[in-house]
Length: 396
Image 1 (cartoon, rainbow, N blue to C red):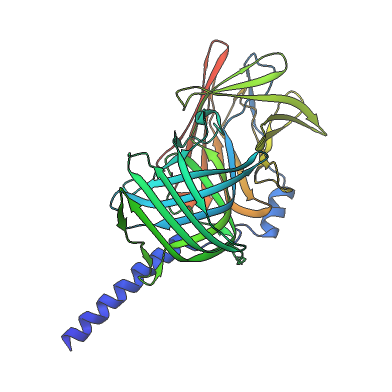
Image 2: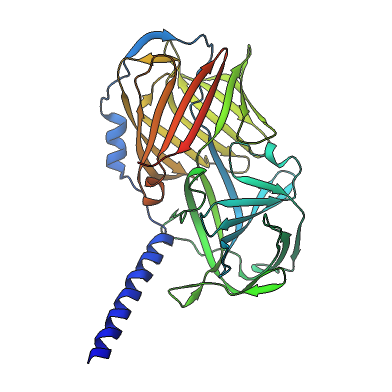
């Protein structure tokens, strides 16, 4: 009888652990209802109380960096290697052809590192502050129709030869719930939200490090964690940058990379908004401000070159205060994030602090759980004609 009781306890704990594992990977739906969204849009909300201090600046501030990346194919594996957690082999479509990136997450802190063949890699999507290494990636593609047959070979950031093979269906199975979990990856670098429209599991996959094969971990001890996805990833960066301006442009010098790449934003008028916009062949980043004495941030989005709907959009209710001016008192605003045309993938609050010269505010995600644990402190500091911005993930 005692052995039966102990066995039941073991089974019970196994079920609890399994449920927690499943909870961490299962997608959810929208975190805000249509009625709640309408209430945010229609309810009268307080406006900021501005002080007299204004920085000598012609154009509005870009208070944080947003980002988005769209993968038309993303191979995902989790091995039992003691150093590594998850491996993503992601394909990005560009006007000049596909770009493959290899993303490996450390087991210790779940921080991702990118391997890609592109030169000047820090200048490519510099708004994403993830460590990246320009190295050779060999890909053999024997796929036929909807059946994938892929082999990858590359040197990872630790100098190990990584060899991965994958066979299975191209991801076509439509997911009813698409609001995907980040599973804790790159928590130090990003507030991230995901859209997962399709997914299919592999029929066969393997992974080797320096020619030694490691097993694929299993979900609930049954199903190997090896799948192909289509997905869009997006959010807010924990970034460091310096904002400058000339007569017609706002220039951001990105400081979280050693080469200090620039993002150059043109200024344009779009209906009732002033829009700061930067564009390359892959994506366009837009910030929409009100026009007038106070240029308050209404929303911001990222558009992907081959997508009809914005890959990412964040809206504010009420609009974020103009950080060129001091505030007489703290000011609160709510935000909602949308991904790939899917509404309400995340929601939260922004608290802008009363200040004299410099600006500081906290971005506090509320739902879902995988953004709630990534609060961000944003600080602005003026030095002469330059302003420095620092965004960092903090403890609540």
